[in-house]
Length: 241
Image (tube, rainbow, N blue to C red):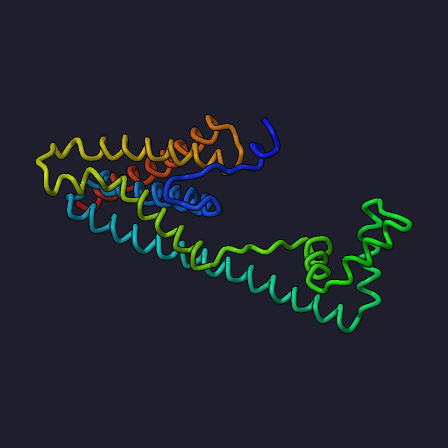
């Protein structure tokens, strides 16, 4: 495996590669939380209409909440980066000598010395943009995320809703097609299990983790959430009915 393969995150159709992380984690959350609602309703013996009502309410409310959280988190990181960038520009304007010394110390620690060190410092400090970019990366260890917060939030919301619809698919189908009621939840389980396997595989690609391990973790965690929801729904359903 070459260096390009090691750093590549792969592609997902209809999604730009830089948003794969949002697609994966939004999809996981959408599948697990919506399936937990379906499982809880199935455990309580709820009617199809109630499964859909609570399922869609969860799908839209949680999806929106997750995307809003993503937006504010991304925006806070962006604003924090810009704040420190402005500080660096101020420092090279008003504390030039000490900032030159910082550049020299940074590259001296990397092994540069003598004329080569002097030349590197001279080149970097001759251009304010390069100078600030170097300080942001080397001193503050901050790298700008060029993605717009609204785009990362939108990618998260779309993934949450699209994948989160899968646990509800059998119940939606039952509105138009005559289906045995007892089969709806098992079909939802199979469809959701397959969806989580796919998402788990994609999560492994994003994190460069072992595919089998990533799939197993995703399916087991989703299954555990569904089991707990079904168990609680069954107990409450028998107690309240």
